[in-house]
Length: 368
Image 1 (cartoon, rainbow, N blue to C red):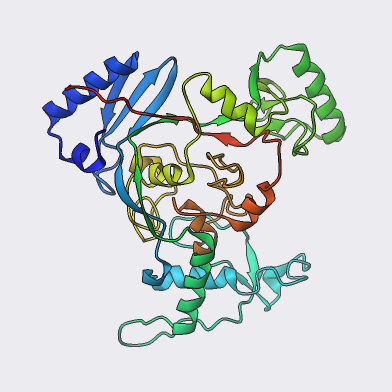
Image 2: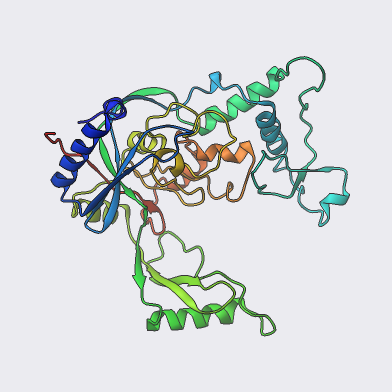
């Protein structure tokens, strides 16, 4: 097994020899090695095309996983962003006013530079804003404790784990989903039904996707869904979403020599061995595209990914972070993120239709 430290230390000639030997052992059709983003983490990433599917090499080793929230020191902007959303965000009636911008009880959502807000307005927060004035800024201890307590609820505890070198699929698959031809009769019928239900006679179709929407986990029916071309009703992509169980997913992967990653492997791969809160470090001032940092396609934030432990899904907060630019919701981008509500909702559920599947298998040992 090649470790991440060994991989980092390889010269270009040795790197080429190792990658060529591994590609031969894997029967890969092609391989490419690149540097995702030297500004963040200068680790070259090898990608192999195997059986028409691309896999990223994640060298293994012994690493510290999780995150110690007690050591997190936010910037002023990060703390303000967190407190502005955390303070009474879900108070009853907070969004009853149709014009909150005219109500002094509301304030704009504080977001970080270059980010987009999830909500346009939120209730005016009763928290103590960090004091302005001369001298270095220091966080209020109570506010700092509040942020750290939130992190402890949302990220896994620090621990040491040894992870094998893995080939990690890129991109992820959707459980129970199979492609359909755009002219398939199922597609024609489903689109007609969708338009009857969702479009007014005096309004053209403004939808980008069509389908049944959220389907109960234990619904045994198969539904067609897909995507329209922008601004038209022309179907450019279609698929069928079928009922599938966790056991079905595990068996299907095993039939091809693949498996689901353990929670530790998933976390390690998403951070590519990094020790920061986010793949790029501790600061929440980077683009959300973690693939620029690790070479491993970033997880979504609205759909959970399955792991080798049924309920221990990762990579989602139920969709709350979609479109958000604040620190409160941005924690979902952490490799160590674990949403307790999402995990609880998966407990005891058999059907996994629509969950994301990131197949992995251990990299074989090679002589090079």
